[in-house]
Amino acid sequence: MSPKTSPANETMLELSGVHKRFGGLHAVNDVSFKVPTGSIKALIGPNGAGKTTLFNLIAGNLPVSEGSIHFCGQSIEGQKTYEIARMGMARTFQNIKLFHGMSALECVMVGRHSRSRSGFFAGMLSLPTTWKEEKAIRARSMELLDLLGIADLADTEATSLAFGQQRAVEMARALALEPKLILLDEPAAGLNIYETAEVARLISAIRDMGITVLLVEHDMSLVMDISDEIVVLSFGSKLAEDTPANIQQNEEVIKIYLGEDETV
Image 1: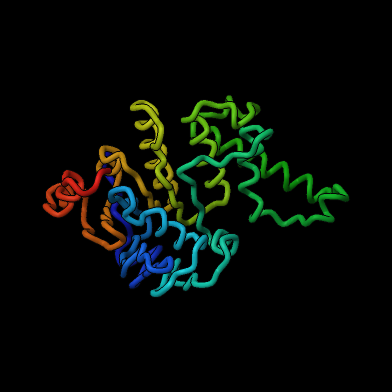
Image 2: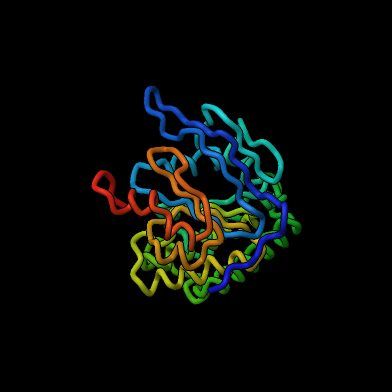
């Protein structure tokens, strides 16, 4: 599939000299890169390279030890995860986190929470404005389930679904936030070849909705197929940043994936 060209000189996310230390462990070491608006950018590297730590720094789950992260031109240093989400950043997780006892539709509707206006007391009083808003939230959530091809599973308990279907519900929940940027943490983890192909289609569809994508992924076929740019991490540092075609020819990248010291 052919990736879109992102608008020139527009940056959705920018990391500058980012470090993260855990005591004597330097998990992320002086990492800098930009994610152009409207692009799909992949973050790859062997296990233990610092990819998930970097995701947690971007999403606000961990504080940066040094350096800066700007989202839509604004520093997000010190911001809470829910504050960053309200700015328009959503994420999924490597280990799927759905709510037990909720249907697929209800799980997606939860993703609209930060966009809703009715407060606690309005909900208790069952005001007409609350009914209208919930109806709109339900309708939009159904649209997202339909977009991801699982509308027929709306009333099924989310945690009882097949793994690939649960992944789609998690993506729909993230999209319910109406994000500008979505962070996808190993979206193809645990999926078979057919489910992985479907995830590739979904990620491209998300970008076609005007949403910028940053993903961590181990499936190199998926990464090379859908990404506009790739950042390679090794031992917490940025080893390379380039187009998929050039990354495939980079001798240092080939060495860390095929060498004796590290495994994917």
